[in-house]
Amino acid sequence: AQTVTQSQPEMSVQEAETVTLSCTYDTSESNYYLFWYKQPPSRQMILVIRQEAYKQQNATENRFSVNFQKAAKSFSLKISDSQLGDTAMYFCAFMPGGTSYGKLTFGQGTILTVHP
Amino acid sequence: GAVVSQHPSWVICKSGTSVKIECRSLDFQATTMFWYRQFPKQSLMLMATSNEGSKATYEQGVEKDKFLINHASLTLSTLTVTSAHPEDSSFYICSADRPVAGANIQYFGAGTRLSVL
Image 1 (cartoon, rainbow over the protein chains, first blue to last red):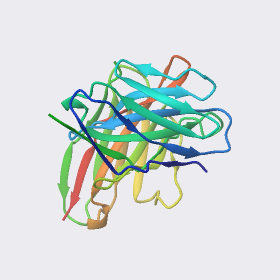
Image 2 (cartoon, helix red, strand yellow):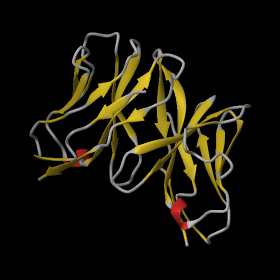
Image 3 (cartoon, one colour):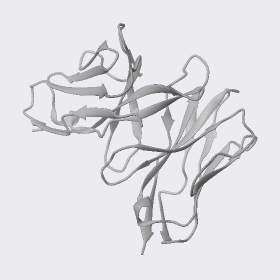
Image 4 (cartoon, rainbow over the protein chains, first blue to last red):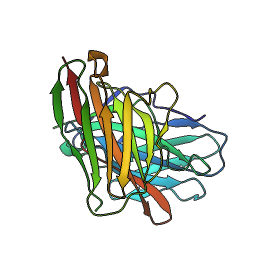
């Protein structure tokens, strides 16, 4: 079974600054996918970014980028130029590529507050 | 973008009654949908995987007779909480699976808050 750990229950950052959210995971799978989802106060889950484990290049989406360290089983999210709208709970998630393909395992979440 | 609609957004019911929650993929077909449960300020826990035209697959510890799942079409899955009790009060979220650029992405509904009195 896979486990996903987010060790930062809460984080805060000033508007326009950069913040990094941590995530580690444990798996015996060789093929898998990693995701970051955000859940704003509306509670609508929104996909932020995804990473395929077989790709060495770190994924980026505008102000969001990841630092994927496969050997260390680490998948951190960097948010640059933080905006007030980035305030949300962020979940790191793991999806295996084998027979359990499609099942997401979520971390505990990190509440991010962006201050003006 | 992919849109998943979940209805109702909030339901209050009396103990012992049944409640049905609908999850629809509005602009794509979803062979597979998922149902999650989330407690306040906690993570999402997968309850079951709903497959169109076949029985749902339940996670360990989830009572399949209490949480009935039906995936009758490629755009609709329903979760029925039968004989609801106060301990079933929670936030229920569905997601629909869509292939995007070689990988499956789950798109989520806005969730349903269930309050059982």
